[in-house]
Image (tube, rainbow, N blue to C red; front, side, top):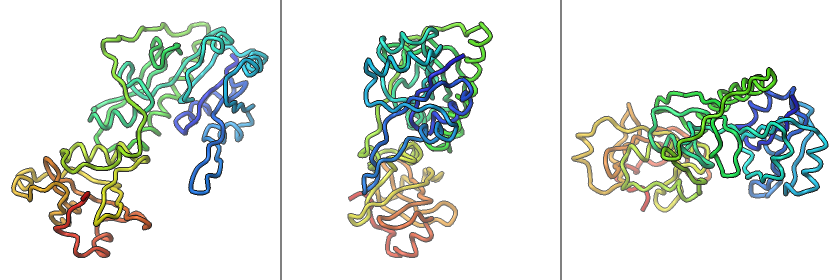
Length: 313
């Protein structure tokens, strides 16, 4: 079995490591500028491929010369995990067995580029990973395998993404083993009537609207970790919210000040209590601008007059 692997972020690395012995090449995005200095940095998949001694491709376009370069490798199967581009038919025709794609959701739920964050934002009690046949339309291919993953309500996009990447790597490896043994999985068409979609995350989505329910703000704190981070302002200065939970005292929230965003109190058992549109959010960890991340007690030491002030104004 000869495989061309395509992927870019850390989500794809466990799958590459799992099937490296089959890989005749690795396709990943060109190095991207990052940080204030705009220094070009390699993708996690590039770093993994180089450490494994695999042949690397980083074309800006999947044009005809590149397609011929891939054809010369005589690959049997294309394996994709979050590569980030749609493949045209001319490219897919190079692979006799077609292509398979790892997607971190239970398709057809949350087709699109941010399914891990979407599951957290929706308050889902389970998510999972899907391996599908690659189709010309994004995330619509027949399902080859799925594995469910229960959620406990404490996951962040970072921690959940790592867990799903590991589960997905096992699924990808089992499918390749089936192809090798001459018993590929039976494709199951997706039910279009059950399809839902998610969009690329935008930086401005991290800005907290304190008029929203505390339960939704808490989900955003977890869903936007590691990016773009849930944020608010205090006296006009940016403030990142790194960890929080919904305060259990719903009766207290009814008698609290009506203005959303007001810091009501510092609770030794919960943290800084902030009035939301419905309920109270307990903020446990936060990060002021130009400062390190800190727990709420350290924050109070530097801001002793914060009780009664309003966030987000």
